[in-house]
Image (cartoon, rainbow, N blue to C red; front, side, top):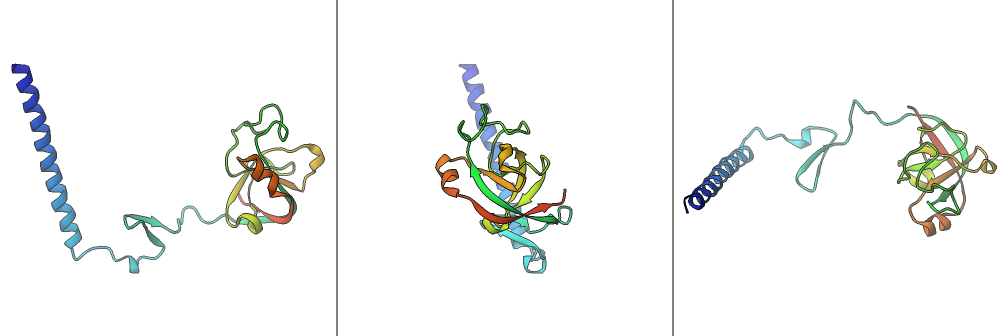
Length: 166
């Protein structure tokens, strides 16, 4: 009976401490909200509020936008992780990584090369991590898609890729 009473008292103590902490935090939050020194986001450029509760930077001076070092005309197609479209390890790329959104196969560019396909994907950045059958040549880019039917219906498109610095 004594241990049971100690447990109840301990639980009551924990709840009391939590209520005190919550009360203090609530008062601080209210005081900050009432402060005349609240940051005015209209005077701070390059910030955005997301879902009314998150302040995010639109730009990062330590991470400038990637620079285009070369443009290359290519044929672009898509593939998926099916044995008929890959080798005997359909979920492992030629560079040894697992397939995922944002990877492409190409026989000309080194692994790790970052590219954009602006006519098809806008500013999305892809990384070369896979290779294609040699008969496809160098000026062919294959985008990995998770769905077989999406890859099949993608077709073939003539476009220009942007090879990015770094």
